[in-house]
Length: 210
Image (cartoon, rainbow, N blue to C red):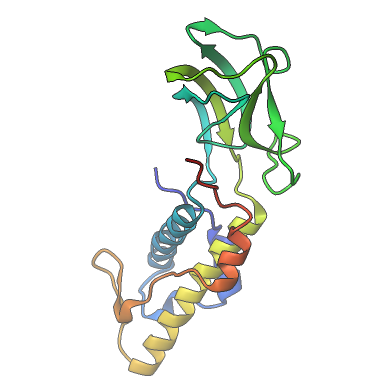
């Protein structure tokens, strides 16, 4: 299911317009349009950050042993680990055979059940995660019950920016700026990431590790 981080009511309040202002017929039409732009803006954020900000429960993944004391999961922050098997042996819970390392910056990724924040890095208590092909299996829950406020606010601002540009086009052209056939937007009004958005997102962006 596609992610939508913005809140429709907040977007409407920030914009301050109505469906009449962009040539739509009903409030329901406006909600549908906002929903589509919200989804597109959220996808831009996910792709830039190389991760998402949704809540994922009971996910099972396999990893190659790193030959180091640590390995990183694809998803984070980790909320709960329900199972961890290493070289076909089930390990005890976090705090015994391994631990979830705390993030260097606490707060930006905090969620209920995952405090202090973490970046999905598991550290072995004794020895290393020996090299091997998919010799680590983990079942875990990660992510956000609600997206971080900075992410939510950024997406809402992106959607508002699109609505403002649609309104400007509608008022200047004097024609309907939005086609109700699939809610395709005329004048190529699409959400985009500004430099100041990227500055905010850089602190959430996944670091690529070879």
